[in-house]
Image (tube, rainbow, N blue to C red; front, side, top):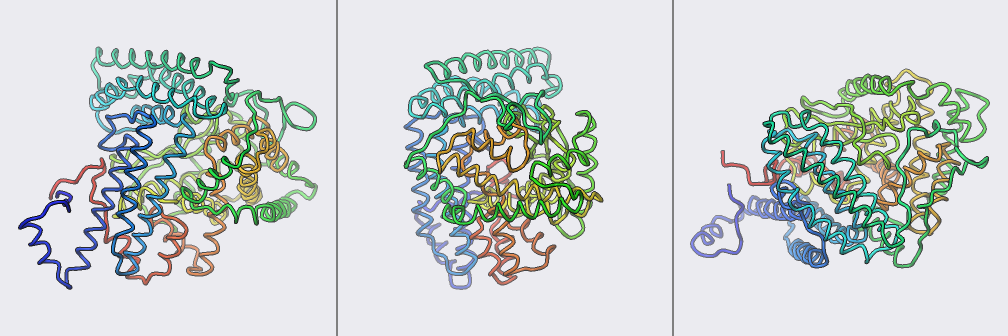
Length: 598
């Protein structure tokens, strides 16, 4: 079916008006909302070079920035004029307003972090080769088109370098260096990822990837020119184990020459906008309670640890105890074997009334090269939306495996997989939700808060007396993340102070702590969402849905919405909840185009 245009008039318009009597008005309004949802999603795909726009790279520049802003603002004006005649439409309208306001703010954030444009190219290429389930010939065709545009993307990014501070210029150099590494690695794995190509096509792909790698090395040098300073170092395999700080007796470790300090009223205001407009986090709340929450989580961690080992006195003692009784695997191979076992346990446990999933698979993979330096333990990498059954992947940082203790593996089996991010990925692809609800609007506190909540909810699935201690260390970790984020982006403390905070509060080695802070430098505010979201979810559960399993199933059924929208959803009547979940499904297909009429 075609998405109906509201710009036309004539006989068809008369017919539509005649059919929209009182008995048809709810259906007509639902169609209006579904069409507007498709418009919002389509612009998002266009500006991210995804779905049906994947063959055309966005070329960054001031003109592109201003055009994007104006397009989002125009849709925001339209959203404000939507007629919401019942609680469900009101909730959907609020979601549109949040989605669009977040996108407007996100344009400015992206242009304050121009490295994102280069990182976006790297992620696209990596996923096209490693995860995309389409034919090798189709992916080859898409890659050729994007490769021809990569110089323009660089020139656009380069034009922005002079508009940002030195630390953001260094990020561009790092992004180029990583692009070069990824392209070089893919060049050596063409038969593995594009096995259906002819010999000449495979040779062409290798040649393009090698050229891209060489270009990226040159771009790194170009971005680094002009006294931009040293770039941040990736995590090295020689790093000491978690809990054993390297360097000086104080545990400060070797000084990183990329460590900086920046503080200004403008930067703080930008940070508050990112928190509020893009993430749905209130800075005033973080400032009010983050210290008391850190005290509470530290105390809970110490009490749990004392039940296992009565000699612990400090957070460092807790880390040392966990290293001793539940440390890392001896080899990378053993780490992956354990993780696969723990993922299977978590998957089986999640089936016991926590989340409904169809047939799917979550693989365990080594960390992608582009996440090696700022995902110290691992993460979740999604999968191809077109594949059936769906296949996603969690990944482990095999470079830093000595810091990936048994507790980290068990926790990630829950948080990244079941019932965590993999379950969210599957449901967001398959559930009949509006496209903007599946994509997300100020939803990180919900998605990360839900996965974080699951860690404690399912801590009993592993018969290990040390794991509850780790779960409490993890709660302390996410509370401390808030303080580290405020150090970096609000209080203007040196990066070194944020790194040392993790060393002191959690016993992380310097190198692992540096990787954690590096992610926070690149993604302001994101790391506040875990504890913030979990805390608010526990409050909402106590108010509206005390049963653990019912509340968990609900969290996985609402897509990616804000905490404010979640509370409005919980206040709806059961019939209206079902209508929100099933009555406004996306008009777009999995590739972002209209589905064929069937």
